Image (cartoon, rainbow, N blue to C red; front, side):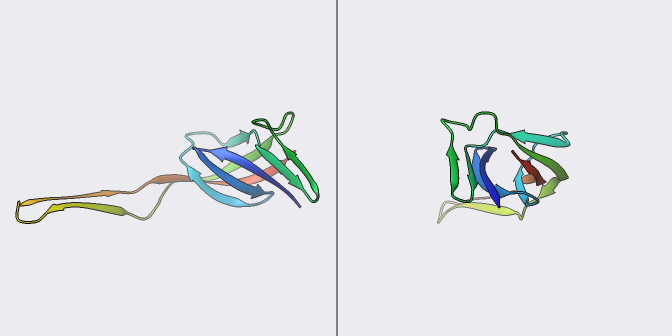
Amino acid sequence: MKKAVIVSGGHQFIVSEKETLKVDLVGDKKTLKFEPLMIIDGDNVKVGTPVVKDAVVEAKVIEESVKDDKVTSIRYKAKKRVNKKRGHRQQHSVIQITKIG
């Protein structure tokens, strides 16, 4: 089974074909192409400098704007009447890897 290492949104992912994963929001694109950093095919390993030449990992976007769980941060100082609460929900896109080649 072929595997590849790709970069999306500053994060590196080890992916294989027909795998779904959650990446940072990619916009209004329906298909994506990544340049792999490494391709693993059994005992055959190709490492790029920085990317593998003539190799492309293709993916299609399944869902857009999927919200992650809420993360809250609290700032509090005792006896000073200072408290602030903030929340954030990161948006993601769900993609499926269609081809490694």
